[in-house]
Amino acid sequence: MKVDRSKGFWNKKEETMSKEEKKRLDTKNLLFIFRHAYNNSPFYKKLYQGAGLTPEDIKTLDDIRKIPLITKPELQEAQKRDPPFGGLLAVPLNKLSEIFISPGPIYEGGMADEEEKLIEAGAKAAYSCGIRPGDIVHNAFLYHLVPAGLGLHMCLRHMGCTVIPMGVGQTVYQAIIMRDLGATAFTGTPSFLAMIGEEAKKGGIDPKNDLKLEVGLFTAEPLPESLRKHLEDTFDMIARQMYGTADVGGISRECPEVSGMHLEETLIVELIDPKTKEPVAPGEEGDVTVTLPHKLATPFIRFRTGDGSVLSEEKCGCGRTSPKLLRILGRVDALTKVKGMFVHPANIKTTIRKHPELGNYEAIVDRPGLSDVLTIRIEFEGTGQTLPKEASEAKKVLEDEFKEMIRVKAEVELVPKGLIKETKEQIIDLRKFD
Ligand SMILES: [Zn+2]
Image (cartoon, rainbow, N blue to C red):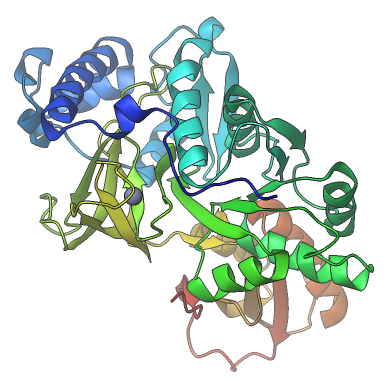
């Protein structure tokens, strides 16, 4: 008998908050986090003083528009200038319970005192997506360095689930463990579960009958409708998604209505026009910009994620009152997500420019089947100054270097000089997300 995953709330009070209550909460949170960052983080103090702001200037929620926006490249710059935290840290170092690294890299502190709110937010999201207390959850997010695996692990445990701390890799073994332990829920990236499904079949495991999955909760990469259907059919389960970023964590999640993703109630989320830097109206595309009231160690205030989306304030059948992000339209800047990881074009360039015998290049990301493929085409003379002369050996060296630099496997294609007209520094994205 399958569990009913279509109704209810984890935290009904927060999830059905009225507009007035939400405004009061946001106002209180904004005033608190602005003052905390101003008084304790050298990065924010400098930024705000430069903008002529004092803590007294932020009194109402509308005053948020006086606060400068920040972007990931700005944080990276600050941390490069003044490692490791770039003045972002707003608590003493010895108060940190963890230090995470998000792609970039950006160093971020976590603190035991702020965990409670973050865990509650994660539990609301997981419940909204269909996970229930008592589920045996196969958690296939990365546990090392980034907060994804460990963070979700704590949320699921808090809900009363049994968590299998699987992590990534070992595709065939993943299916065996799911079967042996009778996992009822999967958390990870959708392309990875699709791959597990394929490998399971090859190894004689029938994903539908030998596995007991009833729900898949996905994030870190888009879940196109075709892939959702493929996973639901392959595993005979429901597939739901959350949206967040490696730096700020969970931002929104689907509900049983599957018609957009409700914003996490405790966050202050704005959609900003990338050109005018002003908020856009509901229905218009803007850059998802987040203020996290509970992240005290390394605050994020008016952080532009670089992801474009559209907000809907229409009433939802599930009863949750927070607005929904209708779809994530992809990066509004140069960062590109490949297999759930951000790839920076600058890191591709740095790797290539180490080798003078390499010429023009282009990087292309596509999804021919169920998983992303990143191909880097590079002109190579075969003269071997810093690389082996043989193209096949040079290709291997480069693939290892890319793997280390961008943390995503890339296919290197070496072509004769003259074949690539000009270097394209932006990653060319051929994937189609419906
Ligand atoms: Zn809903």
